[in-house]
Amino acid sequence: MNKPNHSSVAEFILLGFSQFPELQEMMFGIFLVVYLVILVGNAIIIVVIFLDQSLHIPMYLFLQNLAVVEMSFTAVIMPEMLVVLSTKKTTISFVGCFAQMYFIVTFGVIECFLLGAMAYDRFVAICHPLTYPAVMNKSLLVKLLTFSWVSGIVVATVQTTWVFSFPFCGHSEINHLFCETPPVLELACADTFLFEMYIFTATILAIMIPFLLILLSYIRILFAILKMSSTTGRQKAFSTCVSHLTSVTLFYGTASMTYLQPKASYSPETKKLMSLAYSLLTPLLNPLIYSLRNNEMKRALIKLWRRKVVLHTD
Image (tube, rainbow, N blue to C red; front, side, top):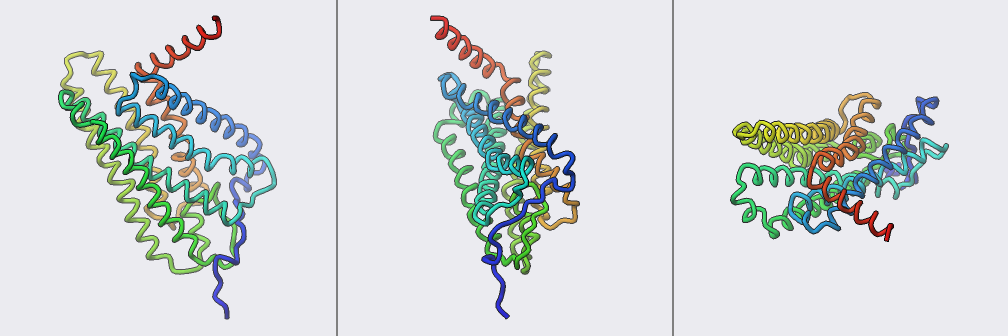
């Protein structure tokens, strides 16, 4: 008997929300609006930081990279999901599924390390303001950004290639919204124990360790805030830290629940909601949290808008 391999599956079927056909039209409208808001919000961040020289400092360059990642991450997922919701086409090719998973993992890992680097940047700026320019110099900035992007590419290359090396034996229905590692892995008809150990280890290194470092950074930051003499400054800094931590916890919490146990016994609906939380909700919230609550970003945006108005009136 011939051993089946992945060539027996030419395409996959994304079940998505097919069990709720009456809600698909409404969900299409909601997800389309969310997608457009994510694109516009993050594009504004990228353009404003690019055009305003005063924002060419580590904090905002990290934020600019985060906005690029958020836009890219969402662009990998949303168009296919919108097609599935709006038409009867629920299939995705083998190559398309491979590419989607590859970029989901790439941008997911990059975001994990970027958020960690951003927390470290804020820790040094608030807790060691006198040495901040010397510590967070251009060389360290480039190293942290390079490490984040290279790590994402390396992890995605190993993980995606490994997943698609498993035999699928003709079973092609993915009970999920997109080609994410855990639901695709469920289709494999081979022993995936070694891969699951790899996923567990990779999740600890790429998600849990950065998250713990972020928590430690913010604990130190909060202690520094409590020592501030200005009540207004203390309240503002505390509010900013809480909003940052909320977004970070949402992203790392749902991502770690998804990947620490790729074959966990969560219901398919729970898995879909967790995936939506870190793939859509955090890209939607981050521009609001990191920009609209930031006076420098607001000033730069107003300055850019006024410059545009003046150009149009001349």
